[in-house]
Image (cartoon, rainbow, N blue to C red; front, side):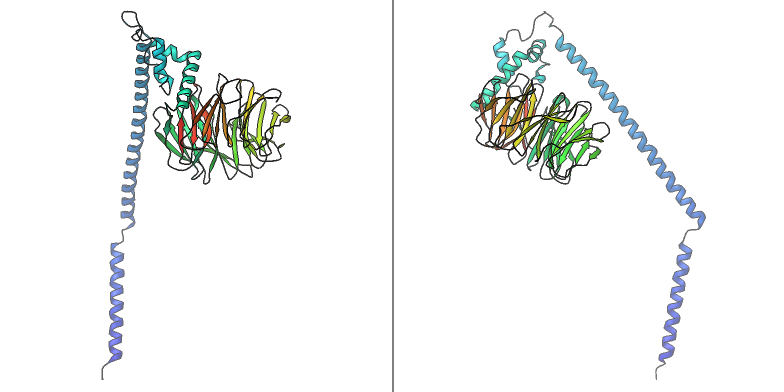
Length: 429
């Protein structure tokens, strides 16, 4: 008979011998403490060398950046000197062009500041207020006759509603209600330069202050604050519903209006909550500030005028028959747009209704006031209306092929930026 017991014992002995051999091999392969110290020192020396190399690269990059900035400033100074200097024979190189032809040429320039470098004469013309107003007026006539179309900055395809400009209007900021991003484009060439992931939900309000700090309101009631380079600074929390309005106030304050029926004041320096205005009984949809007066429009069709000195309601501006969704204040007037399809003009000091502007056939979502008193209004009826300082029927009607005109951002030189339609396009007028 086979010796099964012996076979089993031999197999077990063989397994024990194999395990012992493996253990001995592993112990022999394991480095000694001295070898471990040497290896770790070598690894540390390599990492320190890489760190020193990286630091040197950063210093070299900063040095190169400073050198380029100095060269750019030098070339810009030379260009300005050449432009401002008289021609050798003392005449202007465009002297043979009549003023009418120069004005016609300037009418086709989107940003007048780009014409400063042509010559001294063009610079003077582009900075003369009366001529700038004339050029702007002619331009809007061309838009109305459809002999001219606005420049279009295309976004990433999702709906964009809030819009803002940074100081000097060098960049335009657009907030998405689909993905919570803020898209930033150069106004010189229309190219997108960065994207800020501001919120997980929709961006419902945008503002850029004089220092280039970006404020973004959201559906969750918070306001995220970003530096101009896209780095996060802080988040303002306190509202319990959508923040749909942002406005700079006096003494370093920023106001946030919310659907929770309150307006909150915050410190721009620290982000601390300063006080709350809660006299509205329904959602606050828009906010505008001038001096020590704050104006709020709400879902109950009323505009409240607040005194920021004692934080009380001074006047209630009544007349709209629909929600007040946009307000602008300038030149001692307040302009409001409403779901009732009208634009109303009020006295900023007393709240008296000065005139009602009829022409739109659907909700008015945005208004703006130019320095010369011209009023712009954008609507769900796919039009922009341009109103003179004393008109009650739109002087000019511009049809917008992209669809609804959601919001405005008006540059100091009169260039109008607007978000259009449902594909996230920005029009430059």
